[in-house]
Image (cartoon, rainbow, N blue to C red; front, side):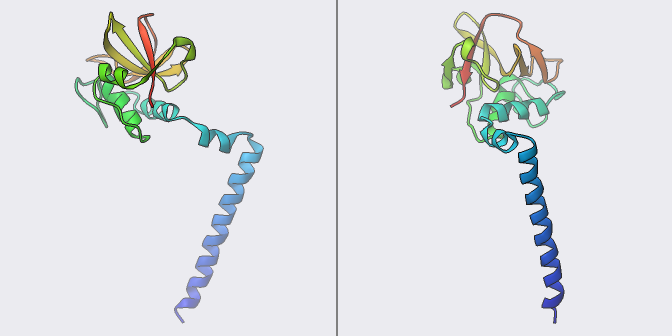
Amino acid sequence: MSALPRIPALASRAATASALTAATLAASVLVPGLAADAQAATAGEQALKVAAAKQGSPYQWGAAGPNRFDCSGLTQYSFKRVGKTLPRTAQSQYNSTRHISGGSRQTGDLVFFHSGSNVYHVGIYAGNNKIWHAPKPGTTVRLEKIWTNSVWYGRVR
């Protein structure tokens, strides 16, 4: 007797799931590329979204999240959330990426600020010559224009 009331509940759940599936398929037809774009996002693009979601989080030297960050802590945290491993410091992150030219940069690539051969800062390229980064003590995670030409680019493998 107790199995009978469960059948309508299961049927109702199945109908809801079917309706959601149909709505998703309809949306992908109405908005071309919706499903493909969601699947095609690179790890860098996904990490960029993670970093952007941390906007306003305070800078703290040596912090790697989830609520406070330094520059390399933000990049390490953002990529870790999408399944990629990065070392802890900006210099080590530069050493572990595939180096690319500025002309080849894409959203989600890392931007390394350097003085001579020493990397001192890192952010995630957001397009339009801007990065998401944790700038310095007394500031918060933010989107900012790249302020110098002394940068190198790296793509997380």
